[in-house]
Image 1: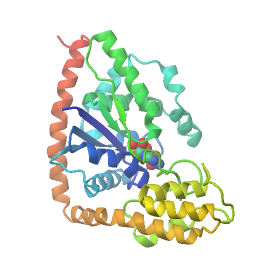
Image 2 (image 1 turned 180 degrees about the vertical axis):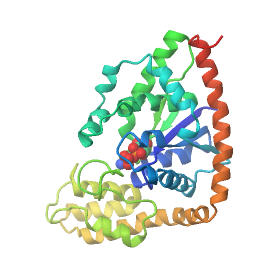
Image 3 (image 1 turned 60 degrees about the vertical axis):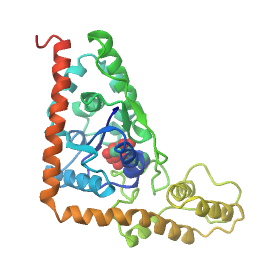
Image 4 (image 1 turned 45 degrees about the vertical axis):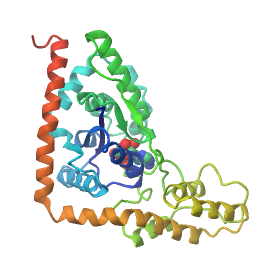
Length: 326
Ligand code: ADP
């Protein structure tokens, strides 16, 4: 059975981007593959964070995973820092990868620009640790959004280099694409992201909150007509409608746009209802897990000890090949 790995940073509750770009892929793959899904807390500490809320943030992601339908009978769930082999493998892999390549990555440059006073080694090291995350489990498929493609490329380069220097060991992981591989921001440009205020809708948002978040999304006067734009606030609303509203609804509003009779208030209302319809069962399941913290702890403890066993097998093989053990 092919192995799958994906992780989400412990920076708070999941939003629609995380859900459509990553979790939807995880849900599909847990049915047919050997999967590990992780809360990657060690990646979360590379950008400014509050240590006193980190445990809560880890819990939020686990609860969102379980609420969304990740099933511990079908997949393993881990917390990255509780499987220490991640950092051990990352160090070993870092010895075969050039610093210059990491400095050139767009994700590193973006983060440097976003946090000019927080440029640390961990940030530069991020893609190496991410490669170790996946390769530790010999993951072949990685359900993540399109923004992660540069990191997947690093992963493949590291796997190839390791295999050529030390002998065939790792597969070259591929990204598992979903229909929502890029969910746009509500602020009019860029992607939906936890770190951009006003850009996101959380999986835990109620209907009123979804409506008020959408109400703030920029549009135009509605009198423009022609083809729907490729980018900007209106384009983003149409993307969300395509992902959540179904074909019929999408076609109706495209038609309204062509005919210059679109009413964005109505479109946002319909969109809010459609999003909430998808989120409602998730929110109900979340409540059950929130009320049963012991069960969540048990799920994690069992899963993490299984993960450590698999991780240890890979580490043994890697250390033997690198000459670190006889
Ligand atoms: P964020 O950017 O909100 O901090 P993460 O970096 O923790 O989110 O990303 C977790 C997962 O969610 C990754 O697989 C990433 O590709 C996916 N993801 C994040 N934002 C989006 C988005 N707007 N559209 C599609 N996928 C996304």
